[in-house]
Structure formats: structure tokens, C-alpha cells
Image: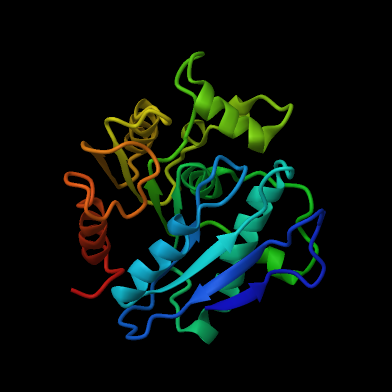
Length: 260
């Protein structure tokens, strides 16, 4: 694993520096890649939702990158700034890594799933962009894989997701950062999965995002599985849920991102 510094001088740096971790596949068979955003309620980052996914993709012949984006006490827009910078870096250096610049996906779990969806849909300029020429590169991923994503609070009682998004938004209403309200016909295709029993993130938010994609004719797959709670990562050994990674691999193959 190689650690990549995203800026010479990190904008608004206060504490931990955001970095990108490169995981090259030992037996590379595809020029597609994913930038992975671990979950952690925007308060921390879960390693198993970062390097765990990267090593899984490596085993299927795909290079992967894990973005160690900023979390609390940092607030918006720094998380999105780091995410955009990560995709921009990979796209700008695609020739160096043997990557198709039009096959760069974003993959995230829980809060990382929210960040991946925000990256795919939030198009407004944000503070601290424009520091150098790299910021002129398109930061929008070509596809997203959203694992039990914290898309939105579905009602006033949904305090866990609301708290998660408050960690991002601070004093700004969290409703400003609901990706399902931002979907357009240009939103990249998505693979989404969650579990029916998830006690942290109401699966209605995954349905809501899926409906927004359908309303705008954006190709997607949505899988609601049974047999496990929130934050399962690869869910290895958990009947009913561990199938999600195989479903994703099949989706990537059908879309030409992995070799048959």
C-alpha cells in the first residue's frame, strides 16, 4: 500500500492530513478502479470498510484507492473537498496507474456511502477549491457502490442518521445535504445494498435514492437483504448478506468494469 499526499499545502488543515492510499492488484485484469470512502458517522473511519474493500477488489484484479478524508471536528465542505480531490487525483494520474479515466467509481459505506452519493450529485462550487490546476479536473465518479448508505433522515425520529449528518453539516440544516434531492439525468449509475434489519440507517433512505434514480432514468441496482444489522462490511460468513459482494461483482462484469 502506498500513501499519496493530495496537496502540497492542504487547505484548511487543522489536525489530521487527508491522504489517499493506493492498493495495486497483484494480478491486474481491468483498467477500472474505485476510490473507497469508509464509514464512521463522519466522526471516524472504519478500516474494514476501507482496506477490507480494497483487498477484495484487488483479489478480483482491480486496483483500488482508499480516501482517508477528514472527519470531526472538521465540517462541510472539507469532507467533500477531500473526496473530490481524491477522484481528481486518480483521474489526472490515470495513465500512470493504467486506469481508464472514464471508469473511476466511488464506493462507500454508511456515512461513506452518503459522501459517495454527495460526490456524485453535489455540483456547486465549494470553499477551498481552485488552489491549483488539479482542481480543474472533473471530480464526478463514473459509478457508485453504496453500502447501507446514510442518504437522509427519513423522519423526525431518525436521530441516528440525523446525528451522523450533523457531524458533517454543523449548524447548517442537514436537509441541504440529502443526495436524493440532487439527482439528475447526469447522475452516475449506482449499485446499492442494505439490510432489512438495519437499526441505524432506515432502509427507506435507500429506497428514496433508488426512486430518485428511477425518476431520472439513471441505471441502478438496489438490493435489500436480510440477516444482519448495520456496518457489516463484506459480511463474510453472514448468511443472506454475504451475497452482496458477488452481486456487485456480477454488476461490474455486466457493465464492463471487471473481466468475465
